[in-house]
Length: 582
Ligand SMILES: Nc1ncnc2c1ncn2[C@@H]1O[C@H](COP(=O)(O)OP(=O)(O)O)[C@@H](O)[C@H]1O
Ligand SMILES: [Mg+2]
Image (cartoon, rainbow, N blue to C red; front, side, top):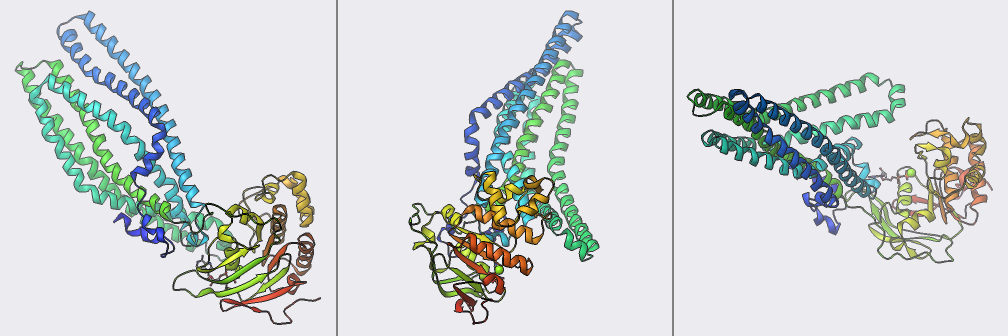
């Protein structure tokens, strides 16, 4: 049942590598553990020594009671008290060292897994993200990855530790009293059977609770970004109700899980209590009738308590395994999502004399198999260094054309070429550094204004950044801020106006020095004068580059070498008169 969702996570039904589904298993996880096997062995060795010292304690108690207290030997009493105290100090020190090393190793494994998942997610297309809830993705990359990591490490340690504690306790119990030991052998296996029965319920309810967590994370992620809309629409109460409902559903499912977990732990717990009762009844009789020494009974019950610990740990591992399987499935669904595009193994470089000639050769593209075709055999030639205007009704596919040019997607049929090279033959990094978009919405990242301008061009000097800002006519605005270029912006960038963000994006594009500059309704949110000014400076700064200008504003289209309109999946020459003044 865990895999019933995985179908939603694949794109491109036609993709031949879809069979790769399910390739990520526990084996994948252990690849991350492998580099740390040595350190883990150290941790295991430490805990084995600590366990050994722990095992010695009840035996020391036996001697303390029988040879010290009952024999009334104060010398012996002092010796065993000293030994017990020394053992306590050693096991505390070892326990501390053990946890420190454990944390170090497990954190490294966790980060490595998370980095691998994030690296993969960075390759997935906007189409994939458009279908995903951010809260769910957050829950997967955060909670589920951590669950998987815990499972990758904890059992290794728990197994070595518990197995030794269990074997040691059992051996010492048998040496103390064979008869009483039989009890343990009858009751322990019953616990195993009991927990197996609960398994599917644990798995199902864990998955549900994980999804609810994702819903709530998602709620906050979305609402924090739309707070202004919530306030201006007077939707506060409605949103608060939604949170209340989410919380209630979460609580209901959490309580169900809690009940399942209760039965998973109460059963073994009660059986342990039953076992202890029977041991004291039977063993107590033996002490009363002098078939056993008091020290032996005390030591035996101490070992019995020690043996149930590891048994519960081992059984808990089993429940943990189910939980980890749920999480692994959820992480696997991320890792199994197939990137739509990737760099070719042997990329072709752009020719030296590249001048930004763009060709669309009968391309066909639709977002969904059943959906309307955004492009249906569309063909377009854009001469290097020309300015081309593209118009067309909203939703016809203009932005999609840009996404195809940047290879966020590949066309279903046909091909796109830059200076004669098929885009699929170009290195993705090279393509995306030579074709640059100034979009309708400028994405601001958390950081200074200077960092935002240089986001796509990390090696830019301060002078280059200022020069780019001057050319984009935003330098004055930036100087007006108290911290100038060091002013901190937050994701979303509410401190900048629409026009300022747009000009920041133009400065960003200038630094990238593109062959092809695309303005996707880039001046839609600024006034006519500013639009004219920006258009003039773009045309002056990028006069020798290819400019693709998507706009309905005559001002932005001024001076275009050709203007086409995108209609019905193809391009037509735009009606005369749409071309702007002059
Ligand atoms: N990620 C997506 N998944 C499915 N459909 C999409 C996606 N992005 C855009 N579309 C659809 O594709 C069509 C073209 O969108 P777009 O290229 O943004 O139009 P515009 O010409 O206004 O820029 C629209 O009908 C839109 O709903
Ligand atoms: Mg658009």
